Length: 186
Ligand code: NI
Image (cartoon, rainbow, N blue to C red; front, side, top):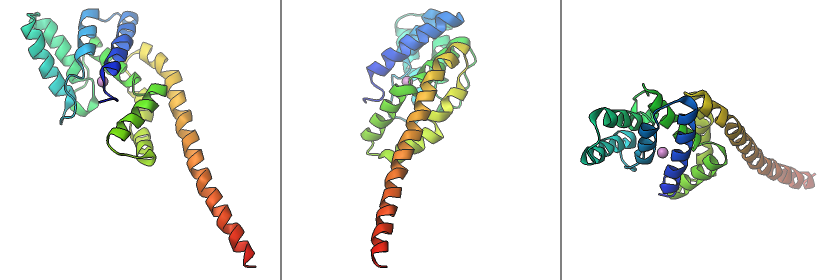
């Protein structure tokens, strides 16, 4: 659980709070959703299951229906695997905050932690960069998040290009070596 641990939740809370203030979103809804957004992991649809779990908790706490529905929507729509588009500003803030924590140096670290947890290697992790991480900056909703994403995306892209270069460099050296030994036959 190290790539989706309580430290991830703390970072998402911090990012969501910053974005919510800048964008004028409801802080109570945003902070509650950020704290509860990853309640359930390792299931078919963690966003929807976390949203359901959050609904139960908030009901038990006696929160009003309107507030609960706002939080539930922000949680169920934070991951595009749920197929639910964020309709409210608060939901957009949660989606953006969670995506920001998947890019930059933290994104690199989390991607490899996640791969390690599942026994995946470097090449497979880089496929995840291509298919998902490098596209995240184009899936942000708020201007504040897009500004925060610039430096993070740039670092992600540089890391990706550098590691690709190093991987190919080794292949080229192997080829050169075999070329050299081939030369000896002449
Ligand atoms: Ni998350």
